[in-house]
Amino acid sequence: MTNRRIPWPVHCLVLAASVGTPTTACTEGDVASPADEAFLSELAAVDRRAAEIRDLTAAFEEHKYTALLKEPLNSKGRIRVVGSTVRWETRRPHHTQTLLDGSHLRIHYPKRKTVEVYPLDERLDQLFASPIPRLSHLRSQFKIERLSPSEVDKAYRDADHYLPVRLTASDASLQRYIDRVDVVIERTSGCAVWVEMVDADGERTVLTFSDMATNSGLTARDVELDLPAGTHVVYPLSGDGHSTSDSQPEDLP
Image (cartoon, rainbow, N blue to C red; front, side, top):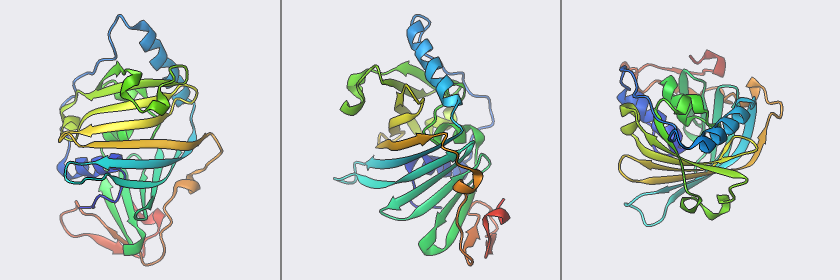
């Protein structure tokens, strides 16, 4: 099992792959209340903008707050998205690269010359993979409500530019890992710029995205993992100790 050198959303996906997710149908979530037509309209508007994004690059910072430590665990790096493929590259405090392509999650530890490969639950991939939230994916597994600007960071309280949303997990498979997610969506781009996640144990993680660019012409090559010769590929959940060496990206499942 991987350690916590990777962004918290990716860590959630690894946990889900390890424990397994239920195959029963999800409980349908709610989007606001019927009376809040204005909020529904605002959600639809940012969702339309998100649907127009073909590729994205951004810087991210993560601050993990836990009762066991006086100071938060901090990390930073960059994220690239092309279609449904997402690459997180954490640069500090440790260099890791994580690739999600809808079917597998791959975590590259350059210093260890190792790549861990995990199967990926498509529902969770859609929810956690990138800062491009899609209403059609979220509404089936979260209750979606308007969030008061007073409950988010002061930098994101301008109602003309930002839409604060609270997502409360309604699906049992998500409730294992997460209680709620507060998201600030930039209205002009449809992208999340601030995310606060509270897990099932009450621990809190804050992600911010900045230096964001969309539809800049990235290709699939721009989100591939760069794996030098001699990289060891392991499958922690295979149960048979399966591993290979000297693998290149195209050799991975």
